[in-house]
Length: 69
Image 1: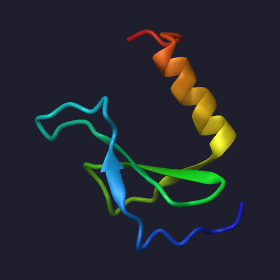
Image 2 (image 1 turned 135 degrees about the horizontal axis):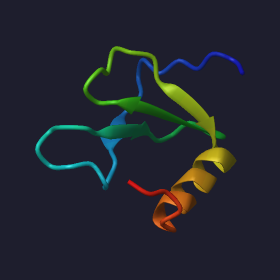
Image 3 (image 1 turned 60 degrees about the horizontal axis):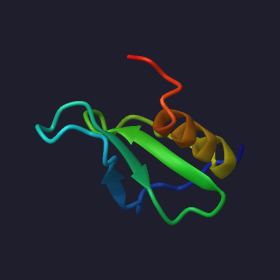
Image 4 (image 1 turned 180 degrees about the horizontal axis):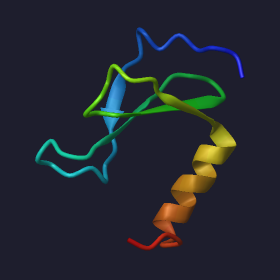
């Protein structure tokens, strides 16, 4: 996969993240065909970049309860 410049990305926290500033997943919108994802505790670390179909499948599985805690 080609390199994606995320320096100007606008990150938002997942609606499932807790409100005390703890373990938060952030995603960046506005990137056609991909979804950049990072850990808000280490924003300087590299982001993971998923293609839209993979991310949509993952989110659907989470919402559908296919993962157990």
